[in-house]
Image (cartoon, rainbow, N blue to C red; front, side):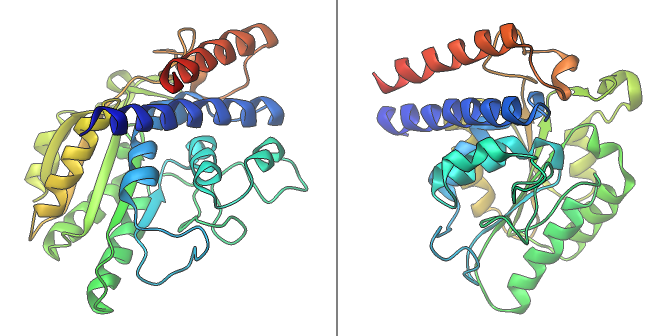
Length: 280
């Protein structure tokens, strides 16, 4: 990847975090930690990979993106706004009763959203169906999905994983946001899901482990996923919850909630500094 392209994708990730932070602060609620841990994944997908058109959000042969971990909506809404699907200033209406930007990602009101979310554990099943539909409709779009590591505790994920491998759905690519924290604490303590790579391999998937904050690794893994035929691909993305802000990183506290004015000022300052450095 060219250095300028890498820098631009890193800049998009920082802007996704900053805009997501502003949306949560304006709403007085939301989920920062997981939104920040997938910022680089969103940057690569929305600004380099997905074949999408903000002017034609329902184009039949577009690539699809499904956010299964629906609480991380601030990150995806920020990416959609920056990509041009709706005005960035609308992010400040996030979660308001009179706003179309609901707290969990919603497909009927928000341009660019392919599947609504809320109840965890359903996104991979929906994505497998979308990807299989492409084959039946003789279209060449790909389906990308993000699930949380805590969400993998839901059994429906493994039914979907089994079906996707059985039907050889090779236009399906799954990201597992492996930040190792969920609502109530460490994933290992609540219900261990590890070793994830061995589990997905046993279910018949092609598996790639990546640094989920390295845009080059993400891009290369997506290239490999596209070259893989006859089986779906799982990208186990090793990430940090709250990535990008010193007081948020590795903190289960930031699964949900709103920063205090002092915490917001620190976060805003750090992200603004990152953006200026990347722009410079």
